[in-house]
Length: 256
Ligand code: MG
Image 1 (cartoon, rainbow, N blue to C red):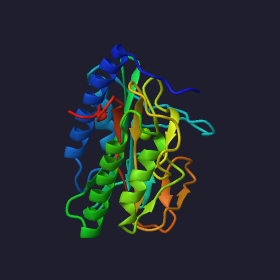
Image 2 (image 1 turned 90 degrees about the vertical axis):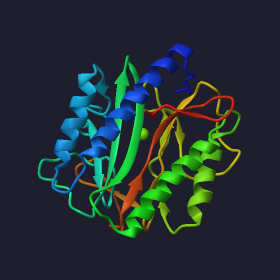
Image 3 (image 1 turned 135 degrees about the vertical axis):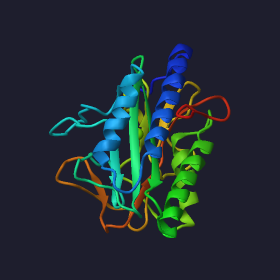
């Protein structure tokens, strides 16, 4: 599949969709607290999206090779879970947890994708730092995503930034093109060599999503076929934005 360049009309739709997605995700963040189940967070996200006539992109999405379609709207990954945790009624958030909320939205047929990791009540300083550095790693990747640069410049910038900290960068999962589908070409790894890979061209829309572990970069896929966890059970954080490549600074589409 080739990289798809979006038209000005499509970009308008993606801009509106991204704004709606960010609005929903921040509303979900605001109800995160000790005692709430991940199932309740998912129900809330789904309701907010459907209330405005849009559709949750992950609901019933079946990735290649999966045994069953993803059964929820929101991916909720707690502590040592990296991504794609499935919401459950019996999974109750506890004071001190950190929780990654990853959500996709389809607005007028086009997709945007976003993730944040948030604290549940009071959390340890090491967890706060992990979340802060992961969010900064995302911004570092975004800063490198200028028109005329290459895909490898994004991963290289993230890798160089993270190197100062003793975090594992997850390598088996990556960012991606997004828009017509929830996952499009190209892959956007969170590591790599500067000045390599496809050129970033104005009109490209990509999701950048570093996943940093407070330990090994290695992850394990659960028996459920979706949830990835750290191999050493240490915590992981995840931040993601959908951005538009322009001639200069990229534009973050998943913002209010
Ligand atoms: Mg994504």
